[in-house]
Picture 1 (cartoon, each protein chain N blue to C red):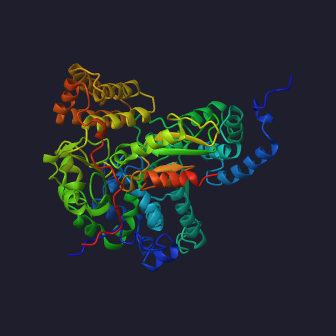
Picture 2 (picture 1 turned 30 degrees about the vertical axis):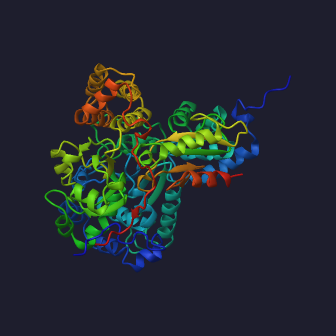
Picture 3 (picture 1 turned 60 degrees about the vertical axis):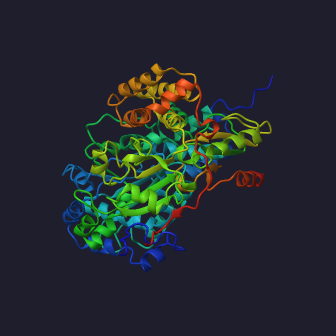
Length: 441
Length: 171
């Protein structure tokens, strides 16, 4: 049975990023169709599709759109391409291989929501992706697809611009993203009000992830019901799962949103190299609580992973084989949040480096059992006590690693060393053949 | 006594560089509504860094002045974002990802190799001013790990031999 591929169908095809190639494969037909529909009908179609945000929170996209106040103009659209969650590497390929799919999704969304100015916030490190996207936008403008008229046929002005960041994980948080887009440091805002009500320059703003918006053309062309049918329950469509770490075939896999995690890791990705066993899997970016090997026979769907005590997050799946030191791995994750805390809220600014320090001491045999307890105590005092979710993101990995691998933490303390020594990152750390492109079965 | 070279005021910046800054900034400003110039702070500072090498206080003030905002706004942006440098760095910036997925594929070894090869600590610049080395966070190249940026261009599927080849090709 052939799988339905919405996003990766043309990945890897030579010249796929060009307008000519996109149009030859049916591109911009969905926009043409959309322009013949009432904007409200488009919003209904997206609602029916059960498309949920692919950036991390998994919020229902159509519902998010309805939060815009009816009579306030202008409204803005901001596409979040600040792909920075460790373990996540999908939006970059959407831009590299299918920039026009994103542009078409933006155009349809703008038409549906009466938006005339959209920004794509691209992370600063994506120099190449910025060039590709700007080229696609130039092509779209030159062809009259966007600009004063849409597709050269409807009097509806749409300007799409790229705003490239300059290196800050926090700017993926939607209100920090807006601050950054306004020319400031990326300090998250207190919510409410939510961006849909008070967003960019104080105006109602829709913020959606790249992958989310790239799904919109397919939904318009094939119908919301068809998209919903690819998924399950309240989650429609396929999803880009990014698998990295100790697997034989890391890469981006487009699978139904409720695909089984164990099947993905063990069958599609071939499991760990060298015949080793899986020790743990982070299912949704490094912020997501870790799953022990015994817990990975689970659906990747948002609500299913929530029920399993973790989250689908950004779709970043990191696999650790049995030769990995979990203290070393968690220590590096803690370092990341300590580095990236914006410094606005005390619990996160102080707590994240504190946890990093404790983990460093445990890893190097300089800690006591009380430090393991203290680690949990610090984490418990960060979560829920900060303006944005970075605090929770720093706390959740710590809490889950310690809970599920406590014996390993205590062994470090007892032996006053790392049992794996210099092999903490696993016995085999070599580059592996990655699967970046359509997966045929 | 002659005045030391580093510019203290906007007026001390080389005129031809300021003119180039203004030309490039004019292009950048087309991307923002005319009454929202301050939104262009990040691209303005990027242009400034390209032209002046690093974001000294006068370069920050130049950007603030042109965007009609306060110098403190320019400073907060110049110091908040990792890719901006308020002090001079080496001619080539080498940034190695040592986040989890890269380390599971040998990223730490790549970084340690470079530290030994260049003889500098994290964030350090070689004595000849050629290279600045630092470890950075996830670059969204986890499936093609390990990865690094050299002068903002990404290199993936690295091996020690490949890293040596890339650095060896730089002037």
